[in-house]
Image 1 (cartoon, rainbow, N blue to C red):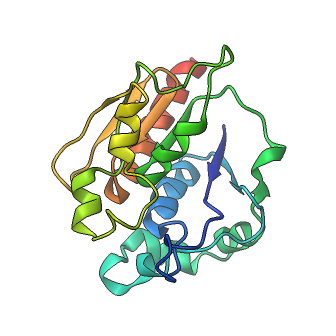
Image 2: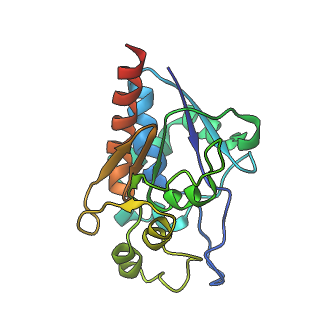
Length: 195
């Protein structure tokens, strides 16, 4: 089985002057769900090459056994150094997004030109979670509000709770803690399709 994981190339946190990037747990947890299941993982990003890491995600209080495993994994880090440019890859597959990456769905259209999330149930980083980290006024839009304005049903649990949603070929996860479970749900979905 082949899995494509897409990471951000964006490295500026609004106009704060602070750095941002991909959240380490949101890469590491799904990465090992896929690798440990024997999947072939390709890492991609819009610009290709080494994507920026959110420095906060590697602070001691956000590290987990999985993030430490990733940090020590030479193969994983070599892959991270040379992500494939996103525009060189194909579409139309089952896919999963987690946390703020649900926001990227605002630009995704179906072949007939309809907004992909219109009429779908999704989850992502909630307004409450954004407020808790003090970035409500920094981010360009709130994921929860944006999804609802595009006609999606936004599903959520308590702040920082593990929550995943599957709607057709689209799987979404609420926050960093949901990244591993979203990956497992994706694997289950792909395994069912393969049978």
